Length: 189
Image (cartoon, rainbow, N blue to C red):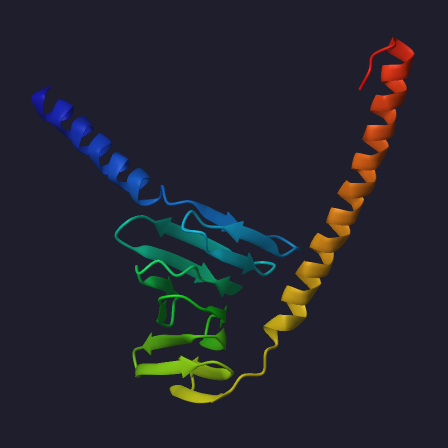
């Protein structure tokens, strides 16, 4: 009986450890890109069919990415690190895009500078530069940014503008309806 109680307690401790390691917030997108505001003030536009898991605190700012995202990192003095299956990107404050597939990693910098680390080494990437890593081709090269992420980030901005206009129109309708209701109920607004 003592062995059985010990075994059950051991299983419970293991389950708690697994649950705690999975407790970091995460966002998974479907067919639409999504804006994610992190607690440090950084913003991430997560492209469609992508996953972002993050842990932000006073000691570190770590995110794990599967898919594509555009980052606008708030300067705090605490390094911001993006982990992918093929390497990591470290930055103190900048805006950049990360695209991952099962075989590759691409990073383009809009502003500032980042350092990209892979199993083949590390490269500093500055504004308007791009670095590409391919696991299959054993390739790690630097070049000029193509800014292909602007296609889907601009589309996301357009969607947000349209939503804002729709909310504004709806707000005006609600305001008119409230005034009408106030008149009907003889309430001054």
